[in-house]
Image (cartoon, rainbow, N blue to C red; front, side, top):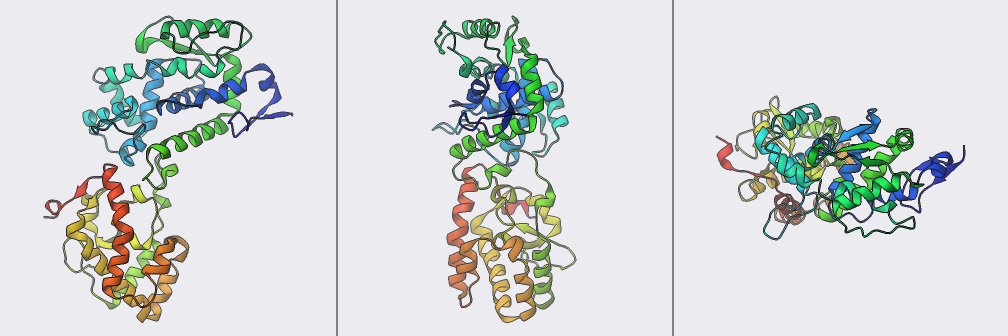
Length: 396
């Protein structure tokens, strides 16, 4: 079957010629071009997901509910700003505001299921009306701008919403079939009717289209969150199995057999049978299991610390001292050295750590300095991104 490769149009998937002959694929590719706000990505993503569920008609309200649920994890679990913040610290993006407001109203955890999120949206629908209504002002018709002005009739893309919707409905009745048309209802009750031909194309290419949307979304979000590492992993809930701590656990087990280690937060001796390996800077920010950020800590405190940053002034030096004990034993004990080397595959990828931190010959002062020089900027970035600080008052 002949295929149309739409790379020049910005797509990263191939489409069978029969769809290219029938539909304006390049117009579709421009639906993600030059968005003013991030919710344009979530709008198309929600539509594709609804079509994949065999929906032929959907209200603005249903689409926006899908958008809120899809944005929940990035905003709350990973502290991503969808379109940045204003100079006074307020949130720019209406979708991000809707997610934050729902979180305050519902008290749902950041890792809530999609069903729980949608149930909460239904429960607090009235309270969310203003934020949801704001999301309907531009994106439903501006997402179609790539299809405009291809016939003899030209229209300003800055025309009123009513005029643009009427224009696109008329355009879709001509030779240029659009993915959806607009009903006459108003507000959140307005419906989109999805074109049969576009529904077939989207269903046949759902995985590739969603991958393309995610790629474009990541580029947008990374530009608006330049300090955030591993952003591509922060768009959806992640499998806890991604965490690779087995070899680090064996390393600390070996150290605890030979040397007393005090808990960073309580200063009490770690019990080998009652400790967890945890991240000093939260995993949800760094998105890795690098050895330089890991520590043994009392299992009973792990859930209390949760997704927060330890107070730097109170706890960093204790953390660094434990890291230095590990460092000394790696260079003094052959058995510990072997356990350390087993961490190379999963936990020792940072060039600075291998070349500077764990090289032989560092004094404790040199070691602390290298660790602080490289960790403090990451810590400060997480703080600016909105991660809360876990202070001494939580350890009582």
